[in-house]
Amino acid sequence: MGDTDRLRIAILASGSGSNLEAVVRACLEGRVAADAVAALSNRPDALALERARRLGVPAIVADHRALPDRQSHEERIIELLEPFAPHLVVLAGYMRIVTATLIERYHGRFAAGLPGVMNIHPADTRAYQGAHGYEFALGLAKGHRDRLSETKITVHFVDSGVDTGPIIAQRTVPVLPDDTLETLRGRGLEVEHQLYPECVELYARRRLEVVGRTVRVRESSEPAVLVRRPAAL
Image (spheres, rainbow, N blue to C red):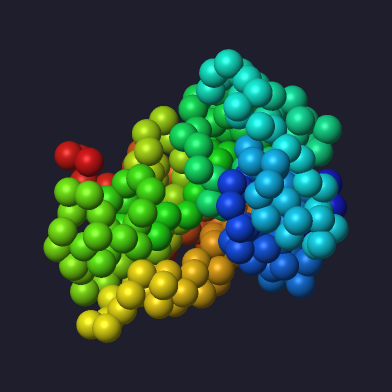
């Protein structure tokens, strides 16, 4: 793949940015065939911005509180990102619901028909959507008091719902009997930091395709893993 075909990613984060750093480092170390061209946060005080600067990635602020509505905010994000010409937007702890304004802008930029916004979620998105995925696994989330034996870190494409997009990959993290929120999150983040760059690499190598609600991994030495959402979800 020539330089003109190389994947360019913009990373959006609202918090500490540990997944941002994991993806950027994977790019810098050659484990992902992509360039992290920009990092953007909706929070001026987000640690993610400082992580990006330390890694040599331009850090941008688009404070949602300065704009009247979600559409205006996403239009501002697009305006700020356009000089960097990203193909893929990677959400890394971005605590804002993404709408069609952003989703449609980056759809098909890298490959025809391929979604252009990716997210990571610390739970099986077929079972739980929204914030506090690790709390859900421990039975601490509101309305979900059953402790699970495991959680599934999920990387998925973003659609118009909340954590409802086609699943790219999942990896299981056991919930141990003595786990606290801190210990489970710590082990889960280690998995997140491995899985997310792997999925971006599959995207960068043009090995992903979406057929209906199914993500297929192409040209693998092993059979493609197909993940389907139940029709009811």
